[in-house]
Length: 510
Ligand code: ADP
Image (cartoon, rainbow, N blue to C red; front, side, top):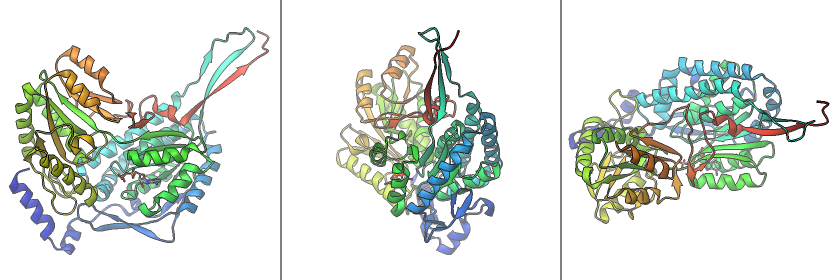
């Protein structure tokens, strides 16, 4: 980020009078999709109080949403439980067609849905449109997978028996989602759950309930029956009590969560009492390794894509850049130049913005602390480094970083590139694997043997080889170690919502 660009942004956002800013950045979406109440058993339900949804770029309130409580959550669970007995009787083809209609409606309303994302989570409109396409792709994918849930007929060891393995839906699923993908984290779970024949109760993140409620509106328009998909939005203050119902109610069979490792561990403990099935997508700490054998331009492109998407706020964003000595200077120089040329901070609704704000001031503060810590231990700031207006954080390039610095030990969730120099492949792998989490990992190499060695040695659930953006509905998503358990997307995604039942037919006259 050049000084001139930074100054422009700073003046533009801080000097504007509140009223003018309000006019300039007001949420303008179809009223049909701007839903602000909970959605339980096919009805829009109010709560005694509501909570504000803020535009993180301006800090202004864009809507107030019903603050659902534990009683609403219980009603939603009961609704999902009663709906389950009907929904699982639908044929796979019927469920498939309804998911397909939901997909079509998302595609039809993509512009409005994208604006909701940009205003409640801050990401640039182009990325929001990308998220809607990605989110919808899970409904499409699982509408197709719904019809391919096959069991097995197994050769029996005893002549007069036949062995069948049936796949059946687990039941009511509680879905708890984060703010950084307000739409895609919902469809990736709910699409799979509904395809399997499960019903769902969703608690969206308090920062981004509008995208979730718009999805409920479209589910209803698609004809998904009452109770099959319920949404209970609530404030952060209410999250623990709503979460307790969703994670302990005996009628709930399964919990699917995406969020921080700390919250995931808490939910896991609650799930234990009633032995619920769990899928957990938790934090990441992705290494991005550039070997001497890499195509450096390709590596720079990958670094830009995997680091700066959503201003660095995705769990698969590169978090630690390990660069081999032979290409270190070249990579750093080219990355700095690409940051100058390509990154532009601003409100997500403006066409040239590539970097929106972080979700809140706390998030920006955390990045600031990591930078201060690194600098105090000898790292150098080559680009950016400053916290700006509100929760805007300059894209920052740090060199001379060492493994004991905070930014290498902790997930950043912000636009910070800390670069560590290494000499050997063994050293890079040791650094990359020195983490208690393992979600994504990326590396750049043109050496085919090295590509196999490193792909197999990285302790992560997703590997990008010469690619910085790899998530897709067709492939698995999920981590190892404390990054979680279970896999979403792909042909395995539906399995998370299925039990396998063994049926033995004996005494046959065959
Ligand atoms: P972040 O700190 O980025 O918001 P969290 O893991 O805390 O990450 O949030 C992810 C989701 O978990 C959000 O929907 C949030 O409301 C929810 N959540 C947070 N605490 C609890 C809790 N005690 N019980 C249930 N859900 C929770």
